[in-house]
Length: 183
Image (cartoon, rainbow, N blue to C red):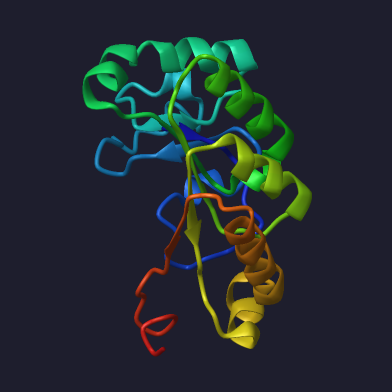
């Protein structure tokens, strides 16, 4: 799994809230923190290892080298690489480069997306990967806009486009009480 940082949405149920910002951030694991104030948010100075850097700037070759470390698992399981986030469409140019290279190297690939992004770039991503895990968030247009900042019409248009391209699209919808469970 390759996680991309950056997401334009603000889903209250987000599984990876540390991925929302494009910037390298730091996360404190409260259970490990000694509350000694020695580190003052400096990852390298934290005596208990409670602070962890979230995100690393990497080149295409660095990502490929990291992925290749798991080749034995991919070979024995018929698995592959999933690009996730955040939202990969916020870094679509890099995602396209990475998927192109992974395809050349023979990897199976999937992407997770909310579909909230540039249609042309998403179309290209759909052509390059084996599966698109398409996460519908909130289908009520007004609620989607006010709660998470999502344009439902744009998302539905992008979903339709991928289906018409005959991409292997797997639609998903989280069941979240108070948000999506009241369908």
